[in-house]
Amino acid sequence: MKQITGINHIGLRVKDLQRSRGFYEKLGFVFLAGPIGPEPVAIMEHPSGVNINFILNSNDETPTNILMDIPDKHTGYTHFALEISDSLAVETQLTDLGLAITEKVEFEGAKFFFIRDPDENVIEFHQPAQ
Image 1 (cartoon, helix red, strand yellow):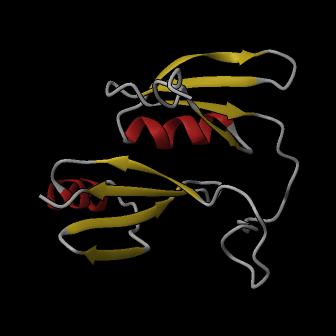
Image 2 (cartoon, one colour):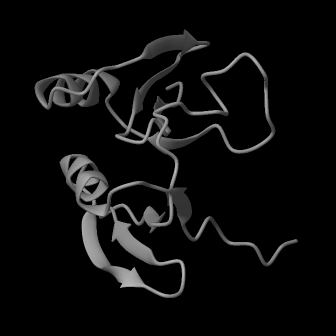
């Protein structure tokens, strides 16, 4: 479909709005609205235009990401990737914020690494090959 022009937002089910909001504010996201709607939803946006909708209806008490942390491989979205321009600078900033990098990979000039948010959702930081 030629009419698709981009990704509008990412939807993440989270347990605690204030905890998630604080985490994503460390990454530069700004709180816009919420909770609103029947689910309810809260919205944050990064100055780059990346928009996240927090779906605030989690009732799961386990800290396990069932798409990533158990042997059975369920279908579903496993992570989202944020494109970056300087992997070393971002890695340093994340470390300074006390955020653990869970995996680092270099492949054909591309550099990418992963962190987890408070609900164990996986975030990739991706610097394309030059």
